[in-house]
Amino acid sequence: MDKNNIINSGQLEAYCLGQLSIEEAQIISELAEHDPDIKNELDQIMSTLESYPDKLTPNPQLKTKVLNFLNQHLHHEEIDLSNPPLLNKYSDATSWSKAVQNFSYHDDASNLQVENIFLSKNKELNLIWLQNEIIEDAHENDQFKESFLILEGACECDFEGIVVRFKAGDYFEVPSNTKHSIRNISGHGLCVKGLVQRISA
Image: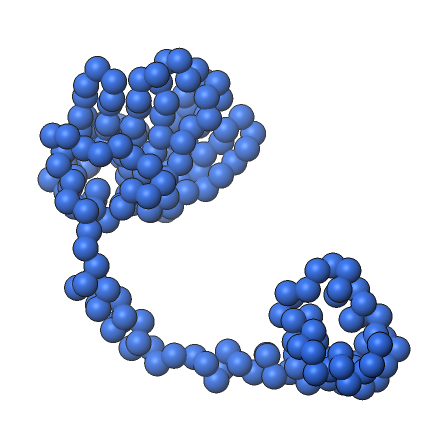
């Protein structure tokens, strides 16, 4: 294998960026061990890549300008609570937060405060604030399907030993036949706030 072809092929750059397969990366590693020129080229590429972050650091005000622009121009869904859309992985937490802004948390509430948003024969939607932890029994799909959209704070869910963390903006469905617990991890004095949807089978 010609050394110059390897150096000019872009494979060394791909190696440094972690874009090669395991087999391809192994070949480059072995070549670098036996060829000082290839090793030197890899060292130079790595040195160049490591210097990029400092040179590419954007102006601190750029983030603020971009976010202000997006806030002015992005259209958020208008949600009608008298006939709310189904929650799903594409649900916009910002739109939902605006829709439920008239519901407030009571400082004297217990561990869990629940406000009913919508109730019909096949659908129930509640707004909840959780201070500590709740544990729920498993329920089957023929009872209802349960899902959550986190609006504020963060929580840790334990699905029978599988622990997953969710934050504001995250949507998740509770697996059927799975006992689960939800624990608030938002920080001292803060609640995790979210929507709970139950759809009848």
